[in-house]
Image (cartoon, rainbow, N blue to C red; front, side, top):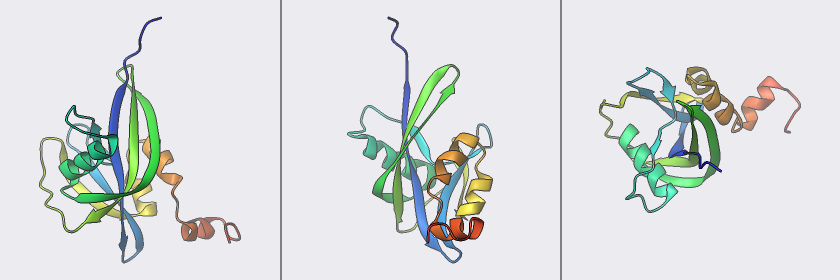
Length: 146
């Protein structure tokens, strides 16, 4: 049986309470101009998947973050190789020191619905939709979740 290569990554859904409710932090990739969740490859020096996720969030957004819970994972093919991304819910610790770099050119805090709209890839949209706030769900489907 032939062994299949897998590409493992880790990242975060970084949440904060904003004036319009919960906001999600997105990054704009330089390579493909896509709005995404902060994530990246697991380095050999990362002691755990959680450490890799926190490092990637810091590198891509400038925010140190605290993990609050495991969010789940996504999987999709990239150039024929399955990519598996493990995500954690996170909260930012203090202010950021983001500067555009060779991978990420911008970051944005967006209310939930706007974040869904802004995300470029359907796979990301579907993943984030499972965390829809109850108040937003009630406005779409009155009478549910009460």
